[in-house]
Image 1: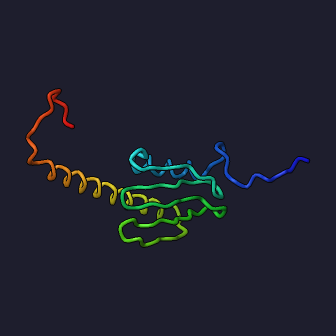
Image 2: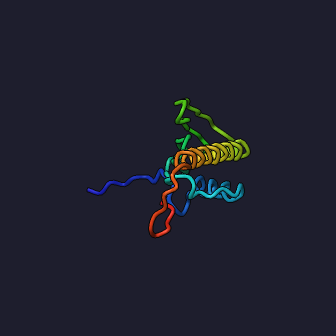
Image 3: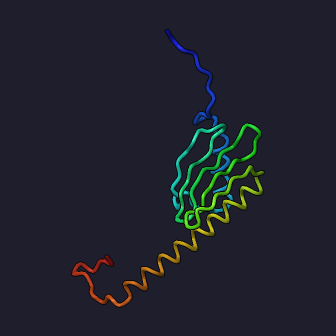
Length: 127
């Protein structure tokens, strides 16, 4: 017996939410490769993401608004909201700014940690 099911998730060809998020990243000149992302098919599509200090998901709902469910890793605070496009763009930019600051902080910490190490490898490589 065959079961007929309605397609209720976004398809790759018709994933407006995911494509919309890619457009925002491109518009803001944010490299998505710097975020760990996974395409999700909830409602009209979106992403699940992780940065050093924020994780969660963002997807387009059937009302053409973006649902955001994110957690700030260090404080464990949750942020859940339904946003219009300009608010989402501002949120993505804030998350990117936080990511850049955290990467810089980690970079400086590692530089400081290995600052006194004057030993060089025989092959001349850094690590």
